[in-house]
Image 1 (tube, rainbow, N blue to C red):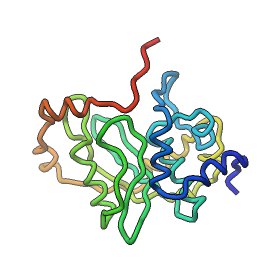
Image 2: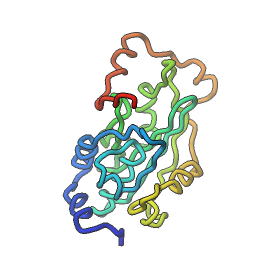
Image 3: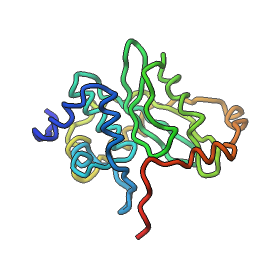
Image 4: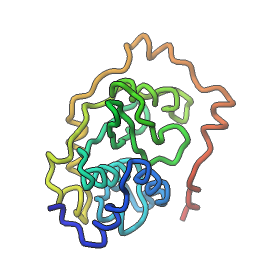
Length: 206
């Protein structure tokens, strides 16, 4: 149904829990998009063994789907910063998130959050740009990948760009008022130092 090869399916079939899926994503190299922007499908991620946030999220969602769970994505929108995408799941009525990121703040979330808003707010403090401003502003309704043909996001060789458009078109909810956004404190020097830690070293410029 998904169009995966036996080997591709077997790789994801071994990831039987969200924790194992997250460990698999941590084991992938970071996609630094050295040859231009990408939105790779699950197949390309498994082949190249590298991913950035949305690529890791679709791979995680696909693994969840193989194990009988809904393949749900959550889109975070930011101002003067990059958006971020995670795969979300539920355990005992609580939400958690699987995430591929290079920094310290936007990673895995344990399934302890009662609502998706609570989950989204857990990313607020660590979601900042190079000017040390906290930039997260909205989160989306969960996007169910079963709405989209697998050949678009599971097996495509030329990028899952239709998924990007679909996520952007999904209803988003504000996390704060404009006045609250203006009052957010910038990162201090210590937070800046810790936030500069990266899991994967950036490649040298060509």
